[in-house]
Image 1 (cartoon, rainbow, N blue to C red):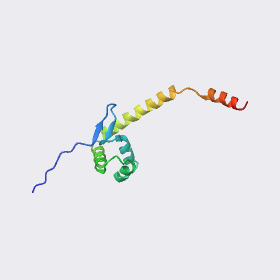
Image 2 (image 1 turned 180 degrees about the horizontal axis):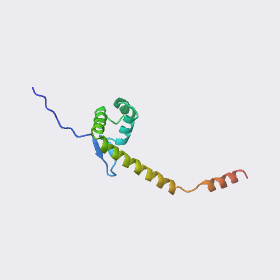
Image 3 (image 1 turned 90 degrees about the horizontal axis):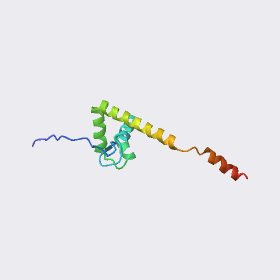
Image 4 (image 1 turned 135 degrees about the vertical axis):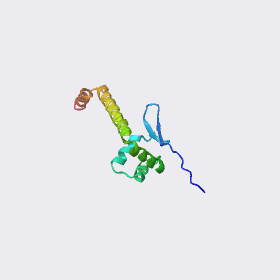
Length: 109
């Protein structure tokens, strides 16, 4: 009886927006990697995100450890994108302080 080694692809899939998700879930690659970097074990990550399988989390962490430079570049790009979105949302929100002041003034009348 011989043991056959099979080539496995990482359980990572890019969605239409370019975000990389783990397995067949909506959990983002950065979520798993940041949890791992913060000291969470694969088991703890699966407890936190129950849609993930333990094998997918281990494979994702293994992929990260083997391709750390490329994954870190991706993570940095995602952080930059998140910052752009935060700034855009902040600049679009109207200043509600004048409305609040008028409502409070009416309340006290």
